[in-house]
Amino acid sequence: MTARLNLGQVAPEAYQAVFGLERYVRENVEHALLELVKLRASMINGCAFCVDMHSRDALAAGASSRRLFALSAWHDAPFFDERERAVLALTDAVTRLGEHGVPDEVWDGASKIFTERELADLLLAIATINVWNRLSVSTRNQPPLEV
Image (tube, rainbow, N blue to C red; front, top):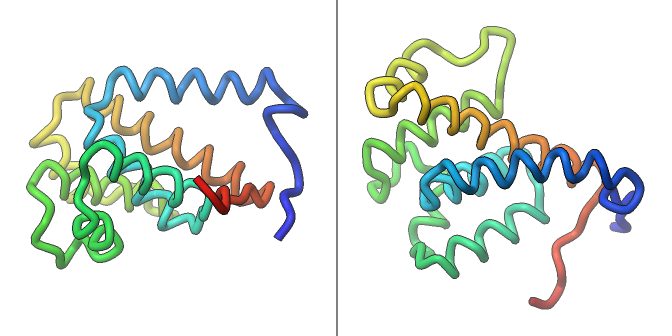
């Protein structure tokens, strides 16, 4: 599959605007939670480039391969704590945003664990990776064959 467009070259100002959000979430969301958000949303969206990048990033940061492989079945996997489960449920709901939005039970579960500021930052993290996924999938951005 051939890439269709290099957004960073064609619209560098827009690319930098999205990267501004990326910088913000990197500075304001706990790294381990951010990697779960990025990898889970990328799996849901079928973004090969982002799944590759974020799985490599998580492994480099010390995440176990068992946890990363189990992320696709996190509901049934015993490897995630209450905070991580709340983040994953929120990531699933926001990424798959249907006509009824984020279910109350998902929001309530997250709001019992995280402060309003933390929830705001998590929502921005989820939204940001979804923007990157949509851009990457649409332009057929491919992961490198060798790293």
